[in-house]
Image (cartoon, one colour):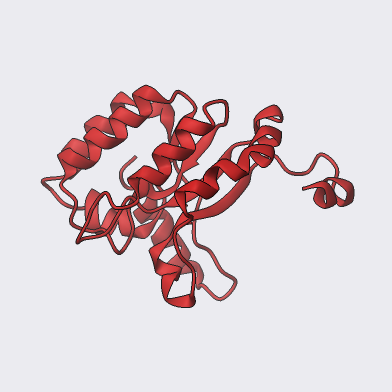
Length: 181
């Protein structure tokens, strides 16, 4: 951070994506952050809190075999750093967790939002539409939930874009990611 501050003064106002538990990269030798290591972030988190910089976390909630396997990691971050603005990417969902019961998922998110006023949730990623928002039984539950907490949901903070993505594909993904709104 000091090097970036020196080379690019007053440039950075957002931090992330920090991977807490991102199962998609586990095959590449990565793993979930050990819970005890989260306390070691204190100096970094103190700087981001003092600067009012949101910290974006990719933290999978769990997987299809154990939907809340990694929930404790996010709970630990929120407990240790209540003064930090935390953005939880993809509502904690992933390609590895596509079968969580909508009511259970919403109950978890509601509890965390109620307990942690600095928690915000990102709703951008194609997997959310494909596995959750397009489901005619789940969709009304999520629409009601998003409406009840509308100031705490952020669209478009983690959009996958690349130079080799054709314009029509990019446009389609913008439409899909915006559909729930």
